Amino acid sequence: MSTPAPKSTAGNMATFNILHGYPEALVRGMRSSFMGDADYHHLTQCETLDDVKLNLSETDYADALADMNTLIPTGLQKAAVEKLVTEFQYLRTQAIEPLSTFLDFITYEYMIENVMLLLKGTLSGRDINELIAQCHPLGMFKESTMRSIPTFESTPRGYQDLYQTVLVDTPVGPYFSLFLQETALRGEVSNVLEEVEIEIIKSSLIKYWIEDFAKYVDALGGETAAIMSDILKVRADTNAINITLNSFGTPLNEPAMRASDRKRLSPAVGHLYPAGTSMLADVGDEDELGRVLELFPQYSSIWNVHAAGGSDGKSIDDAFYERDVQMLELAFEGQMHFAAFYAYVKLKEQEIRNLVWISECILQQQKEEIHKFVPVFSFNAPWRAGSKKHGR
Image (cartoon, rainbow, N blue to C red; front, side, top):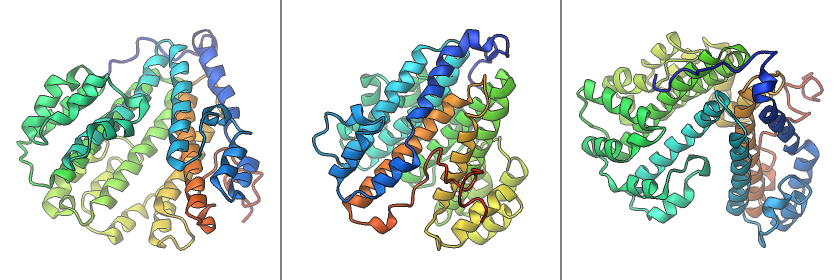
């Protein structure tokens, strides 16, 4: 789409270790840093955040929290993310092509989210310094670029100026260019609220990124293509389902906009594509969405969680997270491929979500909710053969 095809393959059994053996060894060694079932058990028994910090001092987060006098959820999240970024950047410095470009692709998602955070934040008049502080470190541009983004108007002309002046030289510039081209070709005049327009732009950019990433891994071939293609297909399907679900009650669910605006936000890859995404374009409410997803076994069970109204304490997001963790864990089972690098970043993000959730429950004295998280590489996971839940 916009990223050139790789000049070389990921390597085969004879050459992979020569080219990428060291960074792969690093990321597989980093797998041992994930918290285990015993660590989570100890955390859920804590009564105060000081107890949480004491227990985390026995984990891989000890150094990251060493200089923190008082533990708070936001501080814990920031320290854990900074630790992940440091690890990722070290992996990136050890990588050569085509692994280096693969790792860059991972950061593009965070760049898109940062751009949209800055644009959306300025609509509500928030301070630029506060917004930059909330941006993800993996998606940062130069400070001058970050401060320039919110200065443009939230209008078609403003977005054109933003691309030509600021984003054209950034890695996500090609995706923004595609959005502008598509908008111009359709002769589109914005007739939705600015907040909705921002979400449309974000969904469009993520769509282009997923399609571009999928094309790149397919060109790499081998195990990388086999594993990453499935991961990205599921990611694309998740986006399509969430876009449809979140559109209910908004202008995007109006009949005239379903087949035009909403449909084009779904990536042109995935298990749902093309038949499922075409059917999603006609969906007008949750009942119709459920009937479409019933035709796809891998998503019908997830939808049933939502349809049950969280009666078992689980939301549709929790069901998506569980499915993602299972797939990402399996990426570590094979060898001589790049999927483990993507899996490591995403699984670490899940672990950070778990830590923040547990600490928030303790802070707000909601201990009855504390077990509603998705552990990583857990022996008790329902998809593991040794799990006590497996035979149920």
